[in-house]
Structure formats: structure tokens, C-alpha cells
Image 1 (cartoon, rainbow, N blue to C red):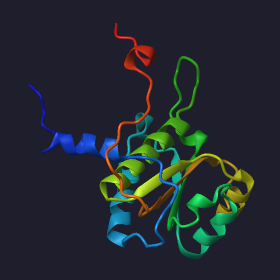
Image 2: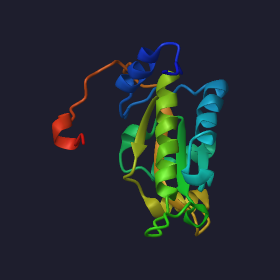
Image 3: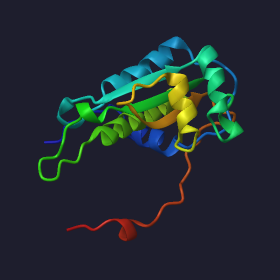
Length: 178
């Protein structure tokens, strides 16, 4: 028996196809109810053993303008919201066989769900890994135990989010079916 989780599963795949890295945003603010739904997605994201070894900073308004000094590219300047995802390794689940902690994996899952939620809301996003880490840590006043995994910029894209086929390797090159 197959559980029907989505009324229209094609809508989910459409969202996946529309998701792309947006680097040009309209200066329009994000409505509070949309932002709240997106943030709820982070809160509900899965984590190993439900440890939730993370903290997310939702950066808007005056602090958001200061974050322009953190980015190496100007394309993110118009995005009205930046989300900083931080891992807290001391709080994470650790794999028994080798002690690997999963905080970074857990934060990555949550940020991915945030990006897909933003796409469903008609917002553009971009995962930003290339930025001035020291400046970002300083602006956020991060505790030493927090590891800044990534920044995600959010806003209304200048170009519409249209479904497009992305340049990806063929399945045979990246998967093995056993």
C-alpha cells in the first residue's frame, strides 16, 4: 500500500525544477507570513537522533545592510533576508563506529528545506558559501562553539523561477543500483 502524502505530487517536482541559485533580487520585502512559514520549515527539519544541533540567524533590516560587507559578490546586495545556518557540534549525534558528528549534515538538511520552501512561496534563494567568514562571525557575535555552515539569501527574484532542465551528470555516472 502506498501512502498519498501530497494531493498533487507533480507540484513537488515542479518546485524542485524551479529551484535555482538566484543572484539578482528585487528590493521588495518578504511578507511576514511567508517568512514565518519558511522559518517553520527550518524548525521542523529532521536531524540525526532529533538532536537539533543548530542555530539559525534570520538577518533583516539594519543588520542585513551590514552584511553587504560580508559578501564577495554584489549580486546578493538586494536580497532582503539572509539566513545564517550554524552547526553546534557538541550537541550533535555522533556515529558509534567512528565518532563522526552530524551537525553539519543536519544544518545542511534544514537549509535545503528552507530553500525549497522559499521556492514554493515564489521566492528566490542562493546558498552562499564564499563570504568573509570572520566578518560574518563578528557581525553575528557567534559563540566560539558555533560553526557557520552557510548563508542563504532570500528575496523576490528579478527573473521568474521557471522550470528548467539543469546540467547534471547522467545517472549511470553517479549512481550504482545493486
